[in-house]
Picture 1 (cartoon, one colour):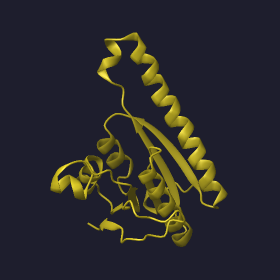
Picture 2 (cartoon, rainbow, N blue to C red; picture 1 turned 60 degrees about the horizontal axis):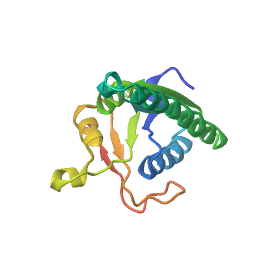
Picture 3 (cartoon, rainbow, N blue to C red; picture 1 turned 45 degrees about the horizontal axis):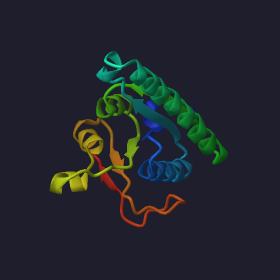
Picture 4 (cartoon, rainbow, N blue to C red; picture 1 turned 180 degrees about the vertical axis):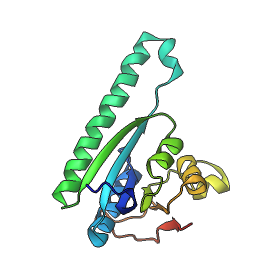
Length: 159
């Protein structure tokens, strides 16, 4: 992988189908552009851990599962002939993804819409990324073919 973040496509991954669609799109874009990928997964250490010893195993598993998912996704990217690195981050997903993608070629996300008109367009992580990122943000809609070809136009913020 290149040391120059400006030649890197950062992809937020979390194992959901929307995240998989974003990864598929990013692989295709990396192959097309000759860029490398940086897969970023953010997990959060909850304050509930202090109140229940059982929740500590949940938090440990969240980190362990995230690391496992990153290894699996990185192996898949390598099989596609794309250079890849990974980052397992703890904290606020919007904050960590924006920080990781600072100066990157782009940040690719699979948004998860919540409620209401505004949230129907963007999930909370995606909305924060579009507002705060210092690179283009590509939001891959749910209707994306498994080969990464978009059935609908990806929405990009090209600040």
